[in-house]
Image (cartoon, rainbow, N blue to C red; front, side):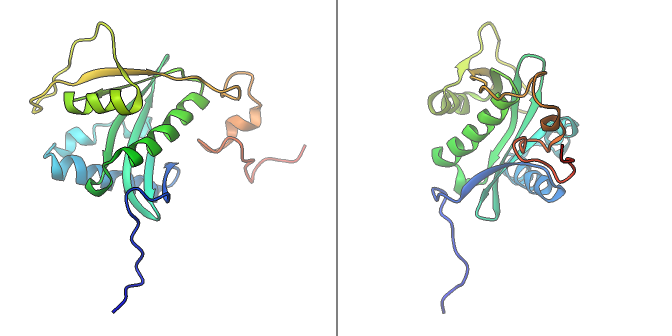
Length: 192
């Protein structure tokens, strides 16, 4: 019996990252985090869902229509901070990580930020350095979380904002558009 279900391999070119703009996408992001952090690693839900989700931009990674990864970005004065990076086990590879990371880096740079940081345990910090070009933050001691046996290392990556980075000089209409869709006029923009 032949199945009509098409399987998408983790290295397939249908891997895509999107800015979360709908409740369904946010639920997908929360589901991925629940699977990876609460179920697999045993982190308490109150730690995983820490109150910062409403002040953050979320990204969701899909393989076709199936959610496979997520990442949260929080915004500070001089930098963006990547948090809660999680991928379902079958999609934990450099192809998927790079596809997500480059989309996220472009998004952060488009908002005018030239620096992104993250915190990672030593084995993951090594991957962030080798695969994505992060460097250890200078002068920062490792940080220990309650219930985590290994320290977290602060990592930093420099970005180059593009010419069309969002700034005070950006056309007003652009600043009214949906996050990440700055080049697409909204249905509510009046014709000049």
